[in-house]
Length: 522
View 1 (cartoon, rainbow, N blue to C red):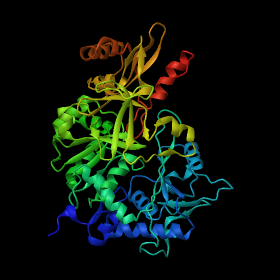
View 2: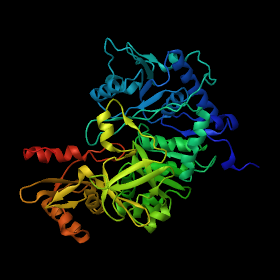
View 3: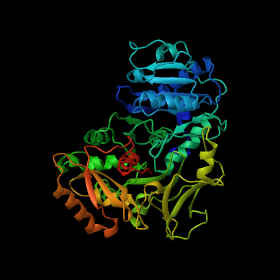
View 4: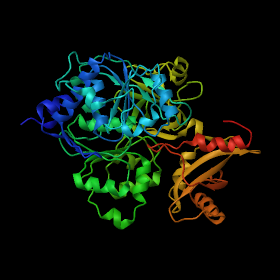
């Protein structure tokens, strides 16, 4: 009998070899699908896109909620050489318009729930398609049902692998469109190759199920649900994250793999102990997290609860760089791992010179094949983040003697007080374990003597009231765990901290208010 690892993998070949295998086990709309049904739906969309004149390299933008449609449109565009652009559904109408204009999107696909944010201009020639409620289709749009009507569910001719155009989350400024050259591969071969990505995280072929619980517009979530599909793992797609319902879904479907972000860990850890103990999570084998720093204690608590199944990967929209397997992280707490195959990591000083082990500097990543990405229509920005073929996403950190990477913080978030570097992520990691703290952001604010001082902005757990006494207790708590110069000098309380859905703190929004009040900008 052929071993699963030796079979033809990838969505397209799995649909041929195992047509009745489940591809979607659960979705917010209630739809389930086999691999044959999923691929047939993608073929119909791809054939219609071709019939409407879209050509290789054209951009199809879509704003879709977590559901089956996001997978179908992603597969359809990438089998005919198009670029797909996944729009964050939390964006405003103005933000949508800016990204659509910058990307040069030829087609727009939106769910009926987001129609009010897409008002077509008189001279807008984009193809516009509505998914969802067919009763709400304004002028200038067509329904998906009409779009694919009479289109065959067979593979389109001259299939070529497409790719994404990805926009960063914009936490440090305006969003940036990231593109790589199209390579024209056969999509079935490419999908089989992409199965290697899933297998690198112990996603086992034709075995188990994968939980989708973060926003499907996000590159990290996409990478892992595609990694799962391409090894033959069906998806369990959830809508808005709910910590207890997530545990219930893991038990209900015997979930083996998942992608999550640290804020989800924090929210699940806040559940009462009897709620956490109700669910059987023993099926879990590989839960990968990325997108934002995970506080050390949070990671330790999750490993103690779920066992050694928590994996970590480091990188950005521009590219992945490292993997930290659970047993390696336990040996080296805080590491984000060693470089993945095909990548190198360098620590450089401000002049671009390599730094020795255990010395903090700028983190640069490099593909061993020398391939570079670019920011669309922004040559200056592209060059600013590259040194040769190596690039940075703005983090500072160090490599230890064994080549394991440790991230200290983002360079732009670093606080310099009295000439000493302070890394907010370290302080946030300590404060997040205070029993009254639900979320925390640490920023540098103006100080007339020291240049900057450390400020903590705290969101409290439900039922806790802000007070001067509590602020003092939080500062005292930090002094038990950190050197005095790293501890916050003051604490403010906020109803909610601004975060992206993937957990990244929008520190610019927090920090700018303090500096603007002082008449200065950062």
